[in-house]
Image (cartoon, rainbow, N blue to C red):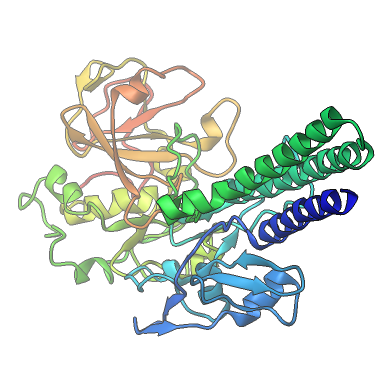
Length: 442
């Protein structure tokens, strides 16, 4: 009788051990990507990621798992790890996406700071997210779900073992008492059944749809914020047509009466990228200290783009319309210019704005003063202003439009807004057309 009980008990024990081995083989993968890479010429290559597997597993015997691309087999721990093919390609000097006309897209990825977890999971290590080519790729959510699943499996196994031990004691020590034997058997059966059901969730989900257990990394397009611009710094400098003349679609007759300023501005859409100190010429732009995907912005202007700061854009538009293009940046362009005292959606100091009038401020006149320069926009009619906005460095995203009411509603002495009119008139006392070189003389 005791031998039969022991044999049954061993059967349950072996079943539990089998479940534990099954659990150790189950890894909730965070991603599954094909390591398809592109060289600078756009040629497609397939890259081996054994080295990345060894690093991910911390095991020199780690190998590429044929179960799925991007998956690594870790013999030392009998588990699997997942590598991200974007990192694999980047480590080999390649790109995971086809090359574009934007050289910044192939720049080395910029690491992203990992989140601080409010509820920590023992043993959880988050993968490294990164930003590249205007996109943020992160797998933090999948990593967290994967770690939580493995942690709960560990707790469940521990609880199941405790209940099996209790049930085994009841079963073995219950000789002569059928009730204790039955309770022990039920306790063991329930513990094992519950554990099998928990472990079987993975198999069930994978059978229904493999995508339910293979989480692709989340890739989000980064969006530059567009706050109220307080200080778009720029420098004095003569404009250059060396790049502008390469665009036949840009309207730039360089003489009056040929094209309207609104049409000229519109022809620049999608072709202007902000560079601090950019006046239309090629790089370098020594004053720009920003970085784009880890690459100094001063060293390049994206292919198919004209790099301009705010005053550079205004002066280029003036020159294309046939007016004298000044060399002043915002620190000088509004010296002595008409101050905005009152305004409506389309007028300043009781006089209607005309296309070509420019509006803005000097940083040193604001309260408190802003170090460096200010900002300048050009009126294009219909209550709309156009600008080269420096709050972001998105390719082709510098030319933006704002209603004049956006600024008119903020008029106050501490803002020190000023306007320079295309016809040179002054509607407020104490104002002039600005410092020499900034007027709109044809």
